[in-house]
Image 1: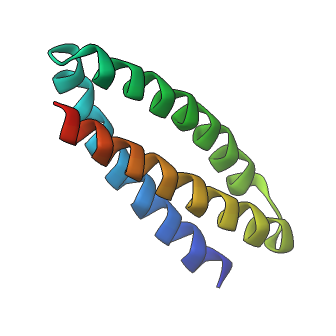
Image 2 (image 1 turned 90 degrees about the vertical axis):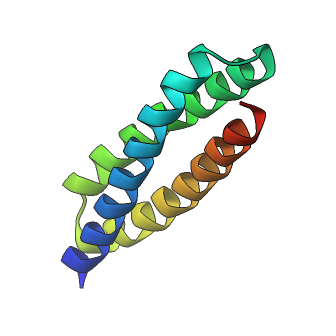
Length: 88
């Protein structure tokens, strides 16, 4: 079960990485508001990467808690990226 949770989270992270890369290029061409939203999303991304590292090293019980936090943070980042997309 723990492995399945980690696989789902890894798939979500890969999806976010792709979206992040696409938006990074577009933001450099975009408006100031998009750049501000990008900076906010980047701070969350750095936090997510730290949490993901903890998840990879966590025991089963801790992994569930960290996994829930990672999913919530990933959802927030995805929402931020979608907002940026509407700005550019």
